[in-house]
Length: 110
Ligand SMILES: [Zn+2]
Image 1 (cartoon, rainbow, N blue to C red):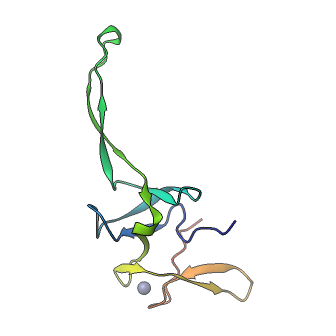
Image 2 (cartoon, rainbow, N blue to C red):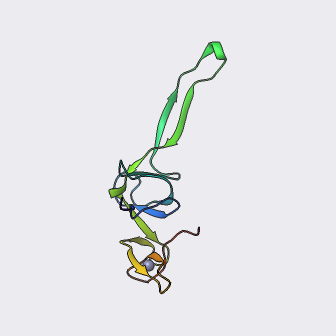
């Protein structure tokens, strides 16, 4: 299976929706669903019902919801914008995603 261009720990920028223009770190990628969960982005309210028998309080909790990968782009900190990464193959055969504008390597540190 082809690996998605966006991977865990990447810094991405949101291109569409209510969080447009915000950046965050990818926490989880679901390649089969083509979605990702990005840290502190796309919060949804989760309503928790109070449960008197367990003495549990109800309330509203914010949690991150998955976003379609098509709304996300890799973020280049040097260019300060989302970029379409291209693959670069080093002399030792290892591959890295780089920014097409400034040639910055966009791989997160392993
Ligand atoms: Zn760049």
